[in-house]
Amino acid sequence: MTRLNSAFVLRRTSERLTAGAAAVAATLLMLLTVEVRATGTDPTPPQVSVSYTEAAFVTRAETTNVYRTLRTAARKVCGFDSANVVTLDEYIRARECVDETLTNVVRRINRPMLTSVHEASARKVG
Image (cartoon, rainbow, N blue to C red; front, side, top):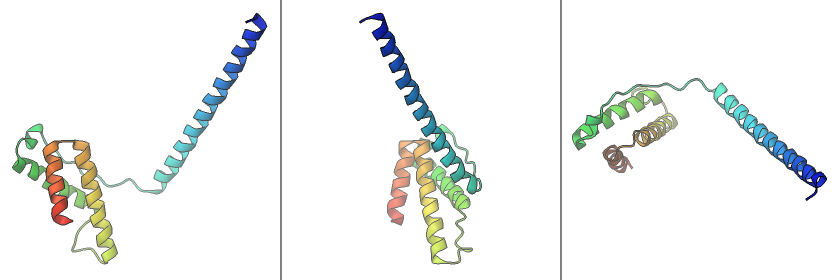
């Protein structure tokens, strides 16, 4: 390859890399902007802290107690209070929120016995 030819190839490669990097950066900025708008319209979701220790997952009974605490917290977060539910739609939305919240929390904690308790509870309800 001649010196002139190799300089052309290097410049062309550099141009392509720069264009590719610019496209990736523009895409990421667009995604961040969409996400900010989506979260900007919603208020901060309510949160409830639940404390537990590793020892809480040793037996099924202890794990079930942790699960009950998590379910109670999920009901608070989702506003699920059967005494205050006015319509069937509100009841269904609150129930779905509790189920989804519990599933996400159990997945995040990632303990086999807790997952087993959650799946058994879901089978009873469903």
